[in-house]
Length: 415
Image (cartoon, rainbow, N blue to C red; front, side):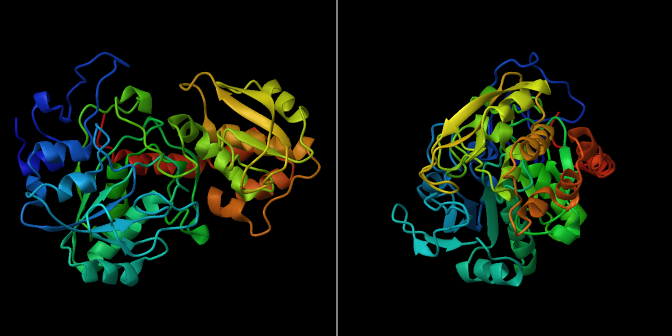
């Protein structure tokens, strides 16, 4: 059954199409497996009506795939119903060849011949000029996020939305699941004084939203409603579902996000980027393995003694092939999440920082205070330095988190 353009964008199609209907109860059992149809899947099923007559540019990366793992750029380029004229690549690039902090630059895509423009590190009027030069009148965003404020793709979304408004371009988001569920927000809320590309605006460290929901929040709360973003909603996604319940293929959104298990811990353990310990880059389990030279089994023992819900810690030794401690055997911990429902990644990350500082005399923050940019203020660092425990650190952000949760609720699209 074909969906109208209005129904497609608003998510108010028929029950057969799996659309979300306000006030309707889910028609399937709790946690029952159900294939999710992404925003792109629904757009294509509707014959691309929402893009009819438009010159389209797509902001995407390797995660922009169909259920049968064809890239949406390849699919749309081959379809005469879509006038696809440009591609815009984020951090790591359109085809995903660059490591953290890198991109692919400007080139012509060998597979399609389409011009690929680099958006990484470009924002405001400079990015608006890129959109204008590309000849597009509609910018489409389709990238898989992982649910953490410091994962840069949501700020690529933000920057592209702002640039589209400045350039007078239409903006369409093709929604995808939050792989670690959309149940609730957690962690500290960014202080605007600490805004960077790993956090432009005051949202929680684990935001619990989809990119389509974030786009609505960004537009209304931070961009003055200038974008009037259009979101093509998913069908069949529910807020309490982890990624393995979606039936969708997992494509690593970045080189150090190999599995949904990585995404599950990332909102907490990425804080170790702000320390002199390895966050597991250069191993097969990034963000699940943490360590440094001189760390021994006392760290895992201290963590297990806390009896944190949903997670256990194994004493581990590993040799990173790149990044911190490249080629050196180091000691640390390996996180094993055994109950995803009760596991709190941000609280666990704080507990890991607190205990690491206590059991390892070599612990230090990165001298550029990167931890402040990751956590969105100086509070986590200064409290831990002052000897605060996990409960005190977590308690310090509750007022801001409560306020963000109230704001967030106004932009949720799914039950």
